[in-house]
Length: 80
Image (cartoon, rainbow, N blue to C red; front, side):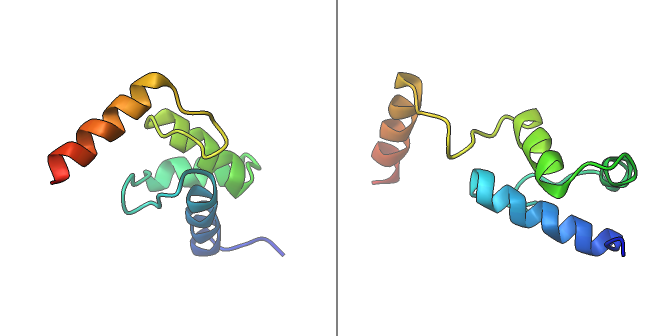
């Protein structure tokens, strides 16, 4: 049995959290894109990975570069 649109979207949201630590509240996705990916047979994980990369997210599995440490330092410094 095929998942409903809402079930599929929830699975994409869960996959985004697993891959990037952020959900669709931070980076919404157009419902037409979700429908198209679902109809084309993309898994929720595939759509989440594509969407995350498309909006510039970095996967947990990717190593941090020097520029990332600098951004973190600046963010923490400004937070004080």
